[in-house]
Image (tube, rainbow, N blue to C red; front, top):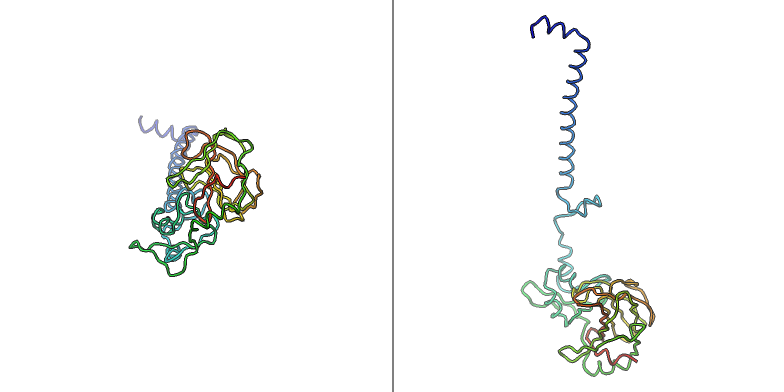
Amino acid sequence: MCLPDLLRHYFNPLFRLKVLLVFFSVFSVFTLTACSTQSHKEGYNKYQSTDLKSVNTGKKVNTHPTNKTQQACSDTYKVVRGDSLSEIAAKCHIKMSRLAKANGLSRPYTIHIGQTLSILKSDGSVVATRPVQNKLPNRAQIKNSYKKASWQWPMEQKLEHRFLRDSAGITGLSINCFPGMQVLAVADGEVVYVGNAIMQYGLMVMLKHPSGHMSVYAHNSMVQVKEGQQVKAGQRIATSGGTGLTERPKLYVEARYKGKKVDIKRLFK
């Protein structure tokens, strides 16, 4: 195109309008790209030191833990509501099996609110600067405990069931049932634990009874009570299921007396 033709197009109003439209289009693309890049960078910087939970809540996570938890586990640990042995072990940086052994606990590792646990030192020895109030009952005390309780059946019907003996000859109750059946409290008591901290037992409920016994209900699908709640004998506390390590839906009930497993068969009416 020669110069006269270019000048003629330049002074043409329609040509000048087209040039302006092209210019503004290119300018807009660069502006939006720059803004988008800056916005993405700000978002990344805002959350790069947080986890997914903090992104959802808008709260930042402290990535530098304090020594408060370590100090609380320096010698003994007092159990509070909501604690489980596995959580305490993780909090105090020791293996749950070692913590259980140091405190004379056996599965399902039942602990009580207000109970004091001995915590292991880094070299593996047990710290005992304060007395630990969790001495297991002797044979005479366990024998006498059977006279203190009179439990009722934990389901509305007596379905197919077995009293399973462990290596020590102590029985637990296994009931074959259908999912969704009512699980009932064997006696009056307080709900001291609801959760699934022990994988093999699935969703569990634990009740503490005035006689000093504790009843454990495992493999539930749903729970109808909460920790700290008072329940009556025969009250619905859960719904049967097949959670945990089981091949079919069932209810497993175990009895304990002051932290030690006892023969559940001798506690029923």
